Length: 100
Image (tube, rainbow, N blue to C red):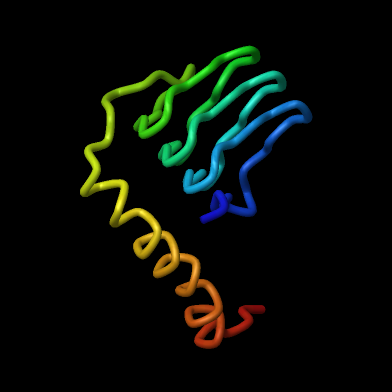
């Protein structure tokens, strides 16, 4: 499974993101950074340049750091959870009304 990246995430050139990783909203990842496979980067995280994160890491904060390692059951659920949230966007936008 490829990485899922929220459209509001700012990812600079030279960033490597492993397959199966999920990058949430308002994340800023500086250049020359490596994020291993099956990682979660929490909303609002700021990853400074040149960092390397191992696979199955939960990464949060500003500056970002690994909080813990995800267990295999959590990694297995990540794909379906991410797909569910990505699918919410089009569904919710149908119910929006223009104001003003």
